[in-house]
Length: 148
Ligand SMILES: [Zn+2]
Image 1 (cartoon, rainbow, N blue to C red):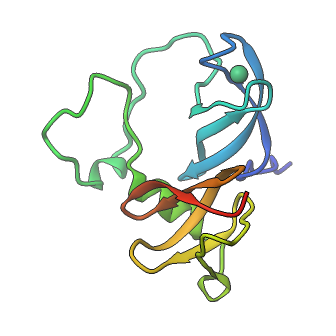
Image 2: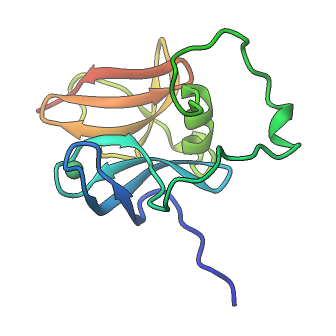
């Protein structure tokens, strides 16, 4: 039997950093079929996905993964960090760039909308609140104004 693949927008169980318990989360971003960012359905905070298995030895990197170029400079003493660019690539992959909506301060944008910005290029709306949206661009996450 084929296991149904998880994709962005699906609900997964993850350890919430704020609620400090195992709760349902909505998948925000995936890389290589793995959930990397989730949003807590309870408190709404977005954070990196944590597997709920008991702690194991450090994740072994496959030979393939070694092909990814890495900067020798350690960023922070954290678990492997998924770069903004990787998240961005993963988010825009299923979306059709021809459907990108031009960004405008008067616009209303829903999460997962593909958006084109005059300076930042193509991005995907990762969350929206009244009056602002967070958009993942290749250069990173930006908060943009929008219609409340
Ligand atoms: Zn939470």
